[in-house]
Image (cartoon, rainbow, N blue to C red; front, top):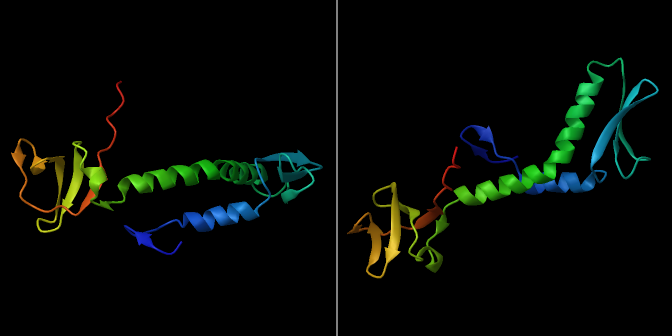
Length: 146
């Protein structure tokens, strides 16, 4: 975690994935065995990952949190990569000149515009846009019907 965004540490997904790859392959589970809480990989029962005495406060809650986090981590990493890609502006290319509406950054105005490409240039609403946008973001998906 090296960068910060809005005062929060930015999670280094490559570092997190590398740490996950070094761990005992999952999914993991936890159980109580001889007054001890054990965290172990489901397919590698002989490889116990952690052990606590059940008298330790709150051993089962800690084991549940570790197991839940470990098992959810691959999906969380994938979802965060997907969401970061959706909110990272990309330089304008032919891909953005497809006739669809895009959020476009115009550095001279220092503002995002809702634009689409037409054969005569960028269009803002029903009129031509005077400006040179440099970066684009796709529009968010429409809300689901309630």
